[in-house]
Length: 122
Image (cartoon, rainbow, N blue to C red; front, side, top):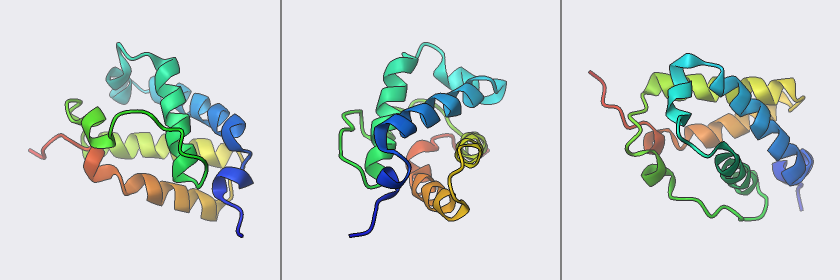
């Protein structure tokens, strides 16, 4: 059986570290940081780690809200989504994730764009 991306990159321990680094970048960008005001970041990072673990072939320990429900009142634009996805790609690259695997991960995340983007184009 083929090794999952979850296993290949060290499981929960590695994903947890990647999520922390990812959110450091996101929270330092004033164009998207406001989405995370009044958010319990420790809890969010735990949910994000569990969600990514499952998406990458690991165990399903994600107990958060449905993606669409979690984002529906946030007024996120396609531009906002692209900025945040760019930080994920940058974080994965800096962590030494192989280019093909980064493309796979970004493809998985991009598949959720229509559930995350809630701002109607003007």
